[in-house]
Image 1 (cartoon, rainbow, N blue to C red):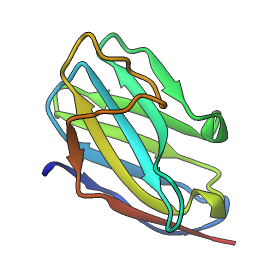
Image 2: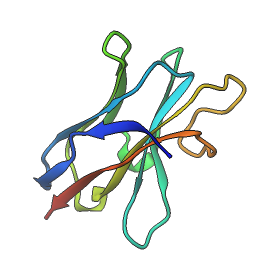
Image 3: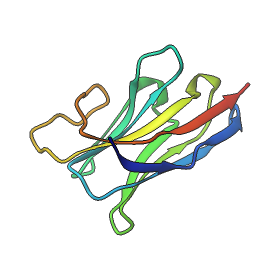
Length: 121
């Protein structure tokens, strides 16, 4: 079921930047995941309600996850984009305090429809 709404995807050349947004209420844990054709879905970044974040090793130093609770919006700021970042990006959320919140966690109950990010070399 599509329960969140992402936007901000697009096409950019290597080295460029994009900012993804996800319209959502405040949850215990929120994150961004991505999936390229023929590959497994992978966690990109997560943020807990206390502000703690977790990032995939491949995006550390280039991506930043943040949230604006007044606007009920989750963001993923991406800079220095690489062709290998090309994928469909999804936002996800979990309200359960007892669940882990990191990029290898599974079982997020709420998901968006996805927004495509394409990086050309």
